[in-house]
Length: 441
Image (cartoon, rainbow, N blue to C red; front, side, top):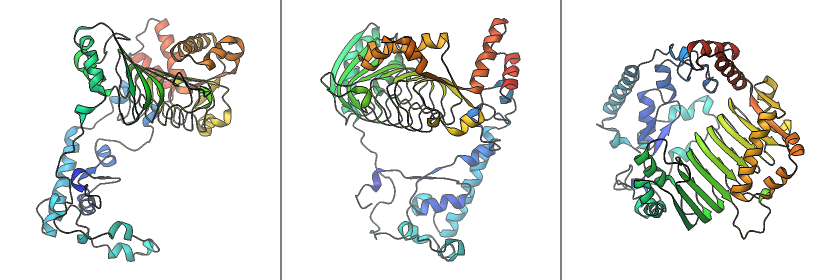
């Protein structure tokens, strides 16, 4: 409100909202939207076992296992019924306060009676003034969103990419595009990707149909949700969230060709690279920040160094890390495979190692072929001198790689491979029962 922007934004409150009273309090503090998560989940049947990432949910809420999903007893009607009770309680509180709608009470903190909370012995020494006391505004000042924001999508960087790609989008073929970029350009490639998916479905175009080379610095979310058929090459550096939600496309990031820095010793992209990626590939020549490939479920990525918490909650896909790692690698990692050069045990999540959930293994013959192939691709795509040096002495290189593999994921792979050898359907009930046995599901 101090900046005169209150009417342009929608404020949401969340965190353990369970009743209509919670909604009213949030509204009085200025919220217009209310985020419910745990309560509706309980209504649907969740019993808070907190094993969502293990695919072993005993009530069938968070699992892809068909046997466990049979146990799910929730219905959409239960959630509807829950929110009808919430809405009714909100109406009752509004009536008690003398108002007809939530819009009328949004931001009316003067209606909060906080004396009971402030004087309670548990609140001794707690100062609520920063929340409850602030500048006074006239009644004419807006206290809720009342006008749409202008996102200026007509000026987005992708419009030029779409214009130059229109023939390929409509008729197929191949196009190469070269443009400069600066870090005010965010989510570059996302609108172009939308056009690909709109016209060609979830599988996109044939690989390399749209090949884009950009020179400079890219802003947030470079290549977010990029579908198959698009290759984004960046010669320069980028901000956070490169390849967020990558969905089949290819992203290549390398230093500017005029750069005199040693690539493998310098940061080239920010935090949370490849967050939630499902398929596709990334080749990044240089070091990236924290939380590399968090929640990756199917993409392949090669990078020359990462920060803390890499591969967190990873469920699938493949990672090759050619340089140093930060601490806590592999926390919550339940699937996928990582090949890390020179990995030290103390950098891996200690609980996962102590429990045996993660295994650190030498490379087998199949692993060596995978790593060699990806090193060659990384060298060819980025001109990586590090990849070239590792390829020059493959025997020594392979001895220094460590394979990071989740225990249960390895058991699932082995079970499915055995089933295929026996002529069984790897997705059938028999195999799923075997998987439950080997994973203690």
